Image (cartoon, rainbow, N blue to C red):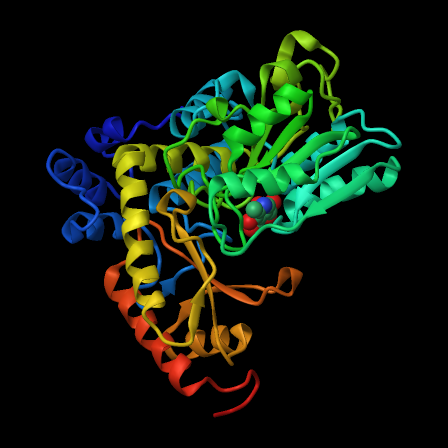
Length: 420
Ligand SMILES: Cc1ncc(COP(=O)(O)O)c(C=O)c1O
């Protein structure tokens, strides 16, 4: 019941809102190029985003398409009705695996990256004198589980400083590796940093870690749903993500993939029946007690929505929009982009600073004059403004924001809290 194939629904009329999907699927044969605005207008019509809202913060939370919202509502109604069938784990695992790679059996569904990474850090046998190496571009959701584990177990927590903007993948790998010592047990990095949108050299780091018997834990909050990828082929030991970001799932959808060797080795953090039944593999970690399964019905629907469009089309559109934004940003005097120039080192996010303008003031200004939602990276005192682009954004919105930014760089913006 929970697997709601769009193609079935299109014919079945069970969906409250089949029009856009029909239109989309009709256009799929010939349309969907990154600049095919008629096609992408159909995609935008599949969201509930208010027409005047310029939403450029998918990096924090992705707005769910209507089909995912409907799936959550329908699940809730069914439970109330009441058909407590429970989530179909196989469908769920297939849906995320089809979009982000990784064999279905390796998936666990916590609420978010924070919880997934906590399962990892808490479940490893780290002891006094061991070391965890990470970077100065990690989000609290990825790094704090390791700070807790190392503090509690008297292990060392080492932070290396990444170059900004990153010059090359090789330079990033070498800098991370400069922090590694004979005591290093774990390296934890983002797949794509939340600060500057930089793609980290995960494959290369996984290779180096394997050679030295070091565990690689990847904070993959962003890439699934943003780009074509294969979690398994990256070669890391753990991959924690938040489908409520780029996979556009409803809030409270996390996922964690465990490499095969860890499915029987990691200690569970939450214990319920079967936690010690190693024949269950990674499924041991899905025994979380009673929880809201409607979020998972929503996740299946949003994953299928993206699959219907096709992840290659999605990525091409995401890059196209980010390219429009980034090209414009780079041409504004006084504005410096901190996201790398090399296309292979970025995808759907671009960060920058405007000389003489506090990014938080700028954020308030953009929200006030044009209903724009941005993210300011205040963490580590970076003070960058970050913009994310996803399939529902429109070039006209980006042009409007660029106009406002050019004006801000030239004339400044009011201080927060001022009335002018
Ligand atoms: C890189 C990265 N890791 C972890 C997180 C935490 O995600 P969540 O709040 O879904 O656990 C975020 C959230 O923005 C993030 O950007």
